Image (cartoon, rainbow, N blue to C red; front, side):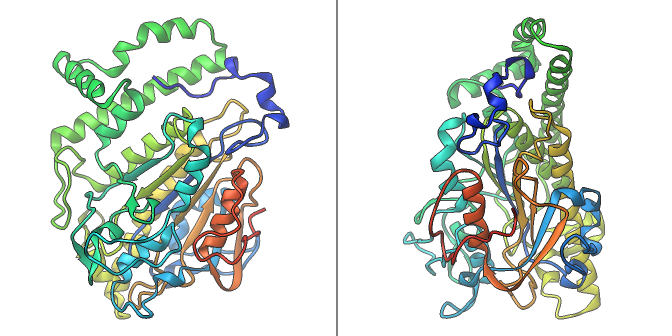
Amino acid sequence: MALPSLETFLPTSARAKDAVGLATTETGMPLRTAFLYKPNGVNLAKWNLRGTGKDFQFNETHRPYEHLRDDLHIISKLEHRNGSSEIDGAGDHARANATFLTGVRPRKTAGADIKLGISVDQVLANQVGDLTRFPSLELSCDGVRKSGVCDSGYSCAYQFNLSWRSATTPMTPEVNPRHVFERLFGSGSKKEREESFERRNREQRSILDFVMEDARGLNRQLGRNDQLKLDEYMTGVREIERRIEKAEEFGLPDVPDRDVPEEIPGEYREHIRLMMDMLVMAFETDSTRVASFLLAHDGSNRSFREIGVSDGHHRVSHHQDQEDNLEKLAKIDYFYSEQFAYFLERLRERKDADGNSILHNSQVVWGSGLSDPDSHRHDDLPVIVAGRGGGTIRTGVHTDLGGDTPMTNLFLDMLERAGVSEERFGDSTGRLNVLA
């Protein structure tokens, strides 16, 4: 089983600058990069900020992570011009998803001749992926679709995949928490992991039962701080295992517009947080340094009865300036903000061997491919960069770029921070250079 970084086994050189390399901080810790996507834009009246620099004021949608202000850099006026209609007509939701991490205009087709571009996470994974067990991790709470017609003549592949290995090959995300758990904490091939799970299931045993003897032996070699850290980690693994078992017991959610496995949680919030918790542990154990998480595809018409919104998200996002729709959209935005805050809190709680939090040693993008969903705007996107990049990102600020700027400029900046130098990416015009 993968373990978190422990001070006992941290080489002295890892604290020195000469240990710095690809996707590594100045203290020698892994630099993690994650991209999280929320669908269907935002209620701009509840999102837009007042003021810039350090003297900005949060709006209502930001309240769930207001206490994390010092770990955030909010950027206004980023755009994805290739998401706009231009010659392609309708299909803004498909283009919002497709361009978010690529900056490339998707070929409008529902056939096998899909064409987009490599996504920024895969550019990074191609350079740093050999440092970890998994080059990258792709997660989703949607069904998996690689074909079919989804949005105005666009292939479903564009709308249900955030990460792209190449112009023609999406990286299929994992939607089933059990499969993510077995991949992260199991061992051996896929078949061996399945056999191990079946055995544990028959014997009603935890995955930890198979490593406890080794864990006790390791514990005797550790200092007090590392003993506490190991115990906290093992407890966390078991808690996730229990939550997955509970989700499997209560079964399928009521979401009519998705193809989903039977074992996923019936409650959307729990599904999101299970995936987030496992992503945090993947970062903590240095199982990967690159991840993407599609919470839901753009155009998703999921209802949110748990927060009092029985109408579909997509429907209310076309608000037509009606107060009732705008209020429902704001409630959904707030729900997603709560999940983002949860993820950042988990990252901030976990400590690296250098004493800093994993959030400190990360760069996390949170955003949507639309700003105002009613008019399908792809400019002035709602985007937040969280984490301090190991101390290289200026936080606690709001930057207004003043004019429309390709979001791919931000990606060039993030790649460079991870030690990957690219002159161009997507429709970039240069590095953003506002985070440092």
